[in-house]
Image: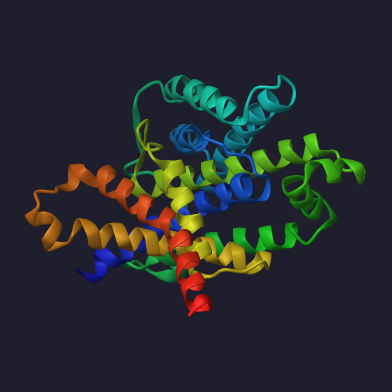
Length: 300
């Protein structure tokens, strides 16, 4: 494995760390099983790409991607809160609709950004040109978002959102507008996922309609793996564990696809989704395995 390949893996892992933070908001904080992510990720990519092609500054284009994702999150929450549609079904409806919306926005299944200035180019005078430059920029983005989330969850609104996910009935009894908290949380969740899509489009040089395939699976795996590696009830450590989980999970995928054993079994690059699914199953089994080990130690 070359150093360039390793940094490339870190780049992808950091992009999907933003996805994992978004999934953390919906699945863990709000207890809202949301499948919108597979649509909001490419939505952010297409919104950003179209804006950049139109000559809009790449940082503004990223912000537009975030805003587009936030709208999709609000749509999912609104279907559940106002129309009473089940959470999973609401996510599926919006995710399905976003496929057509993305094609409408882009006008084509993909939009190339080759030769267009990106947010990474803006830091070139400061960092210089190197294979590690994008990793440093993405690391900065991720930890700025992490710090913002840590601060948000320490505010009254953030605590109210956590209370809404933990016990909505008790939260309503305390005077918390749980519906507004869900709307805000889902907007932030899908906004972060779309932000990741916007950065991914600038990283790889284009937006593609199939970019969101398996986004929610990766995000969930990163959250669960992070919780297994760094278990904690402190929010700042929980957000850190999600980032670590995303990086470690991406490394797992890289080593699995480069394994001589798997290559000997006939697995190729086109089997990436199969390998990813198997790794997700293993990650999902980690908490149960850890619990069994603890019980054996206590009984012995």
